[in-house]
Length: 618
Image (cartoon, rainbow, N blue to C red):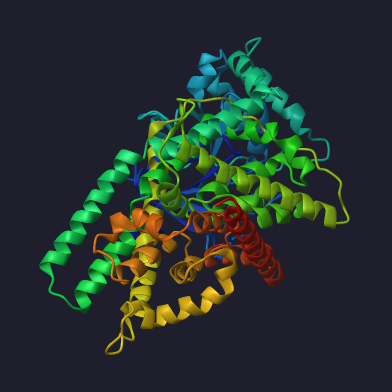
């Protein structure tokens, strides 16, 4: 959209409680015409998109963070309040508020609608998931509800192709008049009584509205069966990461192998050939190959989130996490950290208690993020045989599952230690809404997967590409002197750095090639794989190192070294981006330094113990 069209477009804001379907509606309206950034000065996600109505009207749409009230109890809610009030710098006040509510849970969502009505802005109430309400026998008279609220009311089913037609049609007409403010501000006004009045006037509820949800919850929320189900789901997720991704990874490896051979045959010997074949193809190709595994991990997380299961998992784990000094509300940020610690740390904004939020921020990097997955997959593929255990389970998947469990257990231990050290050891009970179950919409899951793939490939194309070129330069210059007998990389800047660092990491079994890979890994962990490929390619190994790295290190490293490196990456210090987010979220250099220091110490200790024990048994 051009700047002129953007300035004249109708500005609407989607507002509502969490789990009301705002994002699904946003995706339905905007499709691919959207951008995601952060609000200035804070790490709160800002989603903005645009579309053109059937009548030709340009519409800019903002998906505001979920909120339960304008009386902000978290940073998310503060952003939503400030944008609605026009108090957010650089953000114009919306022309129209679109208050999205879950039609199956009006008793909760109407309270926020009443607050929004008091702002005196033109407003529309959207009854989302109206199809689910009909299936449950909930009958909503939109005309009566509209008359009682004093604002237009429309129904939507955001997961259907034409599910937002009634809302889009309304946007072509003149803006509705602003509701009369002040009706809910008097001292005698009772929100709960007003919600009951609205429900009595316009909603007919069946005797039992959520029989299916209740039947499912008897299993999902059972203290024994529920935990067993959660463990099985996580176990299947990590089995699938290896089993399902293998054909796709083979295809990518074949493409990388072909690209390396073609470039090697076409280019004459020299610096350009070395840069493209040994640097770019070997480095980038060895990272891109793990994209299928990362997307499979995200597929499970997005599906569980869309289905309404994640809040129940948080509720189920509340007692366990409370014993470790956390709360069930920490579960979703920690689960998000399996994808990346950055959004996980940002998601702690929904934790109202400051000490629980700080503890969650400090342990979030212990969750095994997707950037570690390429390193795990490389080492497991090289040193763990592809074998079936008990005729059913993949041994490599079992090892990967054990590494993820090690990260989770470590996070709980650290959280408990932090609880023991602080003065206030009281527990805060978890209060949260359990949304209705729903079948995940394939379109929303596909959009989420595309966004994650785009972010990963963007990192490959920017951060990893730049680091790969830098590493190639450091590994190539200065060149070997005349009469040199060792590989040329030994005489390069990278070789000097690696041999110097080896003195520090020799007690944990790391060779100088591993030490070189650890340095760019501070910028992005997955770069370590590309760095190893570049280093070994420039050590005189064959040009197809991108596809031969696993058997190469299997032949040259001991099992003790491989296990030590796996242990290091369970606790591996955060990447620079994660440290920057910790600094911004806590507004403290001290907390950032503490996080980096304790993780580095744990990583070295774990690697040392693992290496020494492995040597004893090997």
